[in-house]
Amino acid sequence: MIEKVPNLKPLDGKLVLVTGASRGIGAATAKLLVKKGAHVILIARTQGGLEELDDHIRRVGGKSTLVPMDLADFEKIDHIGATLFERFGKLDGLVANAGLLGTMGPINHITPKIWDYTMTVNVNANWRLIRSLDPLLRQSDAGRAVFLTSSAARQHRAFWGVYSVSKAALEMMVHTYAKEIENTQILVNLFDPGRTRTNMRAEAYPGENPNILKTPEDVADQIVATVLPSYSLNNQIIVAKEPIK
Image (cartoon, rainbow, N blue to C red):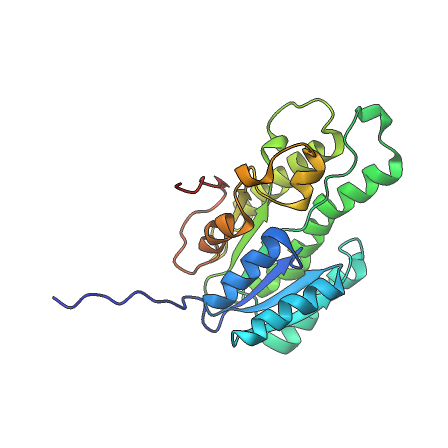
């Protein structure tokens, strides 16, 4: 019997966009996408972080396109779909990783500025991405989209205010979108990384030992799995598995 050789580059020729790509989970996911063969579109506010990631990708022979921007800039989000269509004609995957914690504390103490900006990045920017990129995902023979979420969306935690509200809104929006594309070749899911060693986690739990947490690399493999052409689930919340020690 001839053994089937696994496809080490299942994303060869595929185009995948990653937000919040300059560090943490976004950077780890982008690196793994490239390893799997994808050309990655990298969005982040930090130009230096994007350039550092781009240097790594070039060293390993990968392809990336950098888009330094703040996701609060809705005009740029609205134009990115048209720009990508002109250059590539399609989009095969979206990893919507970018997010903000906002201010932790009593909900009545959160300033309108913090509330609005957190909702802008965590909810409204993702809605604008859906509007802008859905036509491109429909041009792919296996369009995939995954949005990062948190258990804070489903648990009633005091002092998590705007973050919990924004993630709950994100989840309902993504579930709605996933129902609307059921009869297409697109699959849309949510991914909850759980306790992972990121700057946001350190901000939320400043006294926590980071060495007891999953690394961004631990969850990147599980995120990338959701944008593979072979992936078959839709409208799910996938909770990251803990690594085997």
